[in-house]
Image 1 (tube, helix red, strand yellow):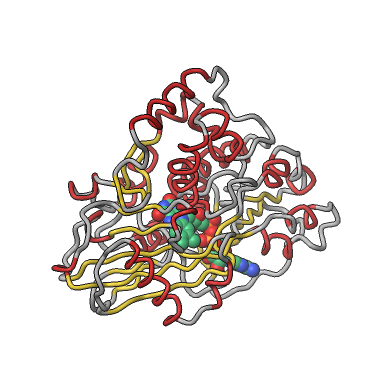
Image 2 (image 1 turned 90 degrees about the vertical axis):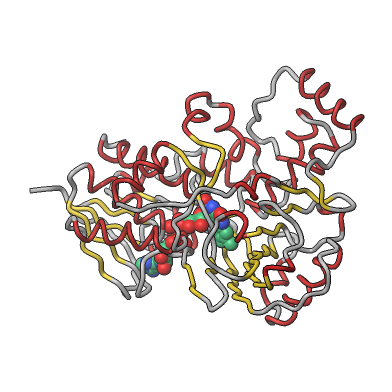
Length: 402
Ligand SMILES: Cc1cc2nc3c(=O)[nH]c(=O)nc-3n(C[C@H](O)[C@H](O)[C@H](O)COP(=O)(O)OP(=O)(O)OC[C@H]3O[C@@H](n4cnc5c(N)ncnc54)[C@H](O)[C@@H]3O)c2cc1C
């Protein structure tokens, strides 16, 4: 008989680990507290176009393409309009530094012999050491704030950047994002259908509160703050370790405008913190992926560790803040035709130096000995493409009893 695995959580981590355990011949049951799969990922079809609650696409890689092919899902590539990406410095521009600053960056970079992030080195310190002060402020920190929404003085360079120094891993990931035509919800929906069709059993609307050792493998694919509760009776101290993992609040607001008012052609814009723009970044959805809609669509990401109060704002207050940012960008005063807003008080893990220390300790050993494993976006892989890669490696490690 096949070995049995119970997976708690049907977010992207739970679905992808179920996918790879299935490939290895396990009998799988997935337990999910909500009535649907996908976790953070959900696509809403509004009368103006699609709105994503979290991820709007994933970076292409061989593994990502393999999964799409296997589950029979087609995808859109980014359109030619999205080639332009902007960073705001006294206005949106393709490159936020002058000639002299760029030459200084090249000099600084070439002079630095040891570019690999050190353990205990923050993004801010790494940037200043390897790139110099201005590129750190106007390139590195805005780019990472658009993904990690954290504090650059506390973000771990080693957790975030090490993969770029690993030649093998570097080759595996691509440079562009893809998404299903029907939105990211179609990805989690198709994954779930594929798993079900191949014998994976789903139990929805079951809120698991405790996990104890039993005769089969148990994988906790829930956020760290939920895993902490589930393991509070374990007695190994792991619950205390998990409670130290911080989460970052985010608001994702998608606003639709008449197409003829489209202010800029491109993928989106990032905002260095000294530019008096409140948002962390904005995406021009209709220019990234061409879908049928008469509307220009922008997703504004607000909040993060530097601006947690946004999470408690009313819809109108968030829209006011976006209108002010749009005015700074000289986007013209246009009223949106409609919007969809999602608030995530505990959106994503804060990739801090403290998290780096936790992940470099053998903190899971005692639960692993009991056949209980953790998998999720707080364990070093935040983006969906990275989660697919990690799920594939993780399944092999569990199989080999590591
Ligand atoms: C605003 C935003 C934008 C993003 N944009 C991108 C992007 O463009 N590209 C990209 O690659 N990544 C992006 N990400 C990151 C990516 O979406 C996440 O890292 C990923 O979806 C996390 O998946 P997960 O399964 O680890 O966690 P979750 O999605 O949180 O899944 C956890 C699951 O566990 C379930 N659960 C919780 N408690 C219990 C319980 N007691 N019992 C059973 N089940 C339980 C939950 O209901 C949920 O389904 C974004 C994230 C956010 C918030």
